[in-house]
Image (cartoon, rainbow, N blue to C red; front, side, top):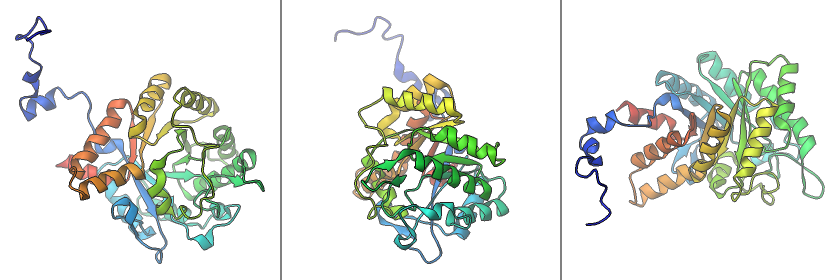
Length: 332
């Protein structure tokens, strides 16, 4: 044997691994239900429920989302992040359903807050669930996604969502300047207490595919989103994006996707020391399901390991479609 540390056999790293109790005693990172935010895909009563691409995950009606919200509060989850399924016939070029105070998101928020007022609700702010071209912003005649007109539209959308009772609006569109504009727009309408969770570091990722099925936008998407979502090759650019959003008034910062970008979770947390959220996105969740169905791994073990890794990397909270399930596993 060679290159043995001089302290051996006095120092044996395995001593503190030999029992469950000792491993728990020296555990550096701990995951609790209050670290987790439940991702929810909403549907109307007559919309399809199953999402095959996400391992059997279901879209929920408003009534079902109210029941889920109560369960989430009972098990101390941090909150719920809501996203709408939209039929193709309800989409148009300008995404006008996003500004309707009686749209699915708004009705769900009002119902949840009426029944479970203590539930923390987070609203996605972007036009892709509502546009017939599937993009997060307004499209020009040449196919360009128009930044400044989109920002104006996002202000309207954020105010509608705030008026419905959402505690947090989460712009996921990646338009330049939208955080400051939305902050000003909310404040002007008396929504000073509504927080902004910025999708500050959002990559143009293949891992979003199942989500596009879930909200009904996959078939609608014309082209791709690389002119506004970030290049997966870039890290320093993500810090610039986060710095701009902080300067514009973001209250929390998001990194999306999650596991492929744990380096960015750590870099953003270290750089800004702000509440930092990671999104365990649809593709990551779907891969765990697919691996489990193929017998390649245990779903529960893979889910819990993934969520713990987010915490170790510096995330204060994680949005995941498996939050309720993970909380039950934590409860033992």
